[in-house]
Image 1 (cartoon, helix red, strand yellow):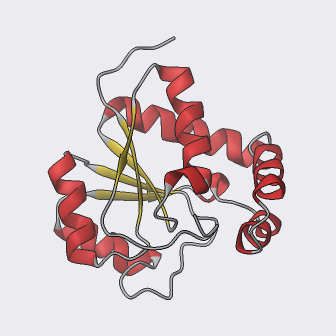
Image 2 (image 1 turned 135 degrees about the vertical axis):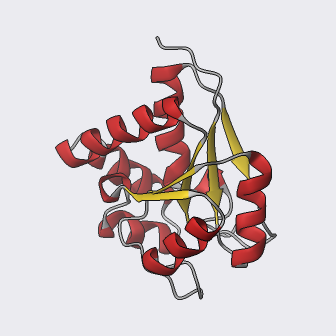
Image 3 (image 1 turned 120 degrees about the vertical axis):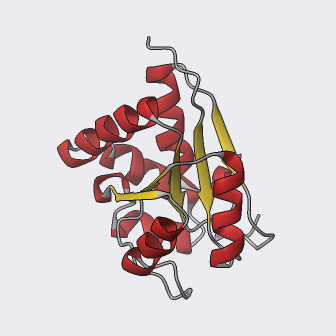
Length: 159
């Protein structure tokens, strides 16, 4: 197992504004955001891929989208329907697919090089696939997982 001092950060932008979101990342020392949404689009202003990358760049934070680590549509549908068991089953199966394994390797390599943060919508990491991704990375690297929070908001699972 590799040992590294950089923690693996995670963050959800649910309920956040761009200024508050960027401030939390900067305060934590994050230099790279790894967007692990399957579809990096958002109804929330500023959080779709291109504008988000631009806001982060202005703050001196790099951005990389790793689509292979996003939840497939069936998993998103299960999550929105409140079926956590189906969501986890679908996502865990997805994590064994070649694109997911390739992007997991890239995420791990980048997180070992520099303070990196996994990004998704869901505020509560306990209800998000990014916790599964972060825990897999931590098991492989010995890194600590730290969750960053921007604002209070209800979770997709109603917790």
